[in-house]
Image: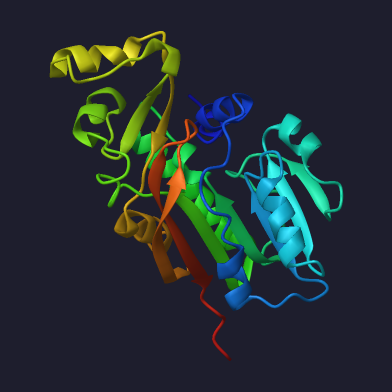
Length: 255
């Protein structure tokens, strides 16, 4: 599987299925660090059908909001009152170095998965590196995604059993709900065989705070400045824990 497909195949399968956004759009975090002023540029990466783009435009009416997505069908549904609608892959962002004041990733990293977990990790790192490249010194990245640290109370997930299918701790297997597949009546070997099930739709990765922090800080000048655990919803409407994290790109040192 090519690197382009690593960041796109699972995510855009989800997009085509019209899975609704289920994590909070982190505009409040951006507003704490960025002023609404003309000329400011905010990139909405993985904008889908524009739910987050709309919220950004309402919160930063003077800024240049750019919707970016691999799925052209989603971009076509995005509001027209934005500075740009760009189709492409987050593995190679078509934006100049140090050109953005802010970047939003809302429910995007969860879908960068692969049957080979090392390839998935490398793809996630590449996306973060690209974001750090296009952010200005002092620029802000806000991430809103699924959190595996607290969800035992809201959305019980046996991650160790999902790992038998996905080969990565924290990555779950998502099956067609009509198939009503459960693990309770199956041994580990039976669960592992579900990796070949025709009802397996995609993988989704849930992050811990440390994992998300290390992902960003180990490959870029990004440093975490704030994070919080919140309640979101799954595509089926069930409550699930999410994480909202804010990173800042280190300012350039004075000569």
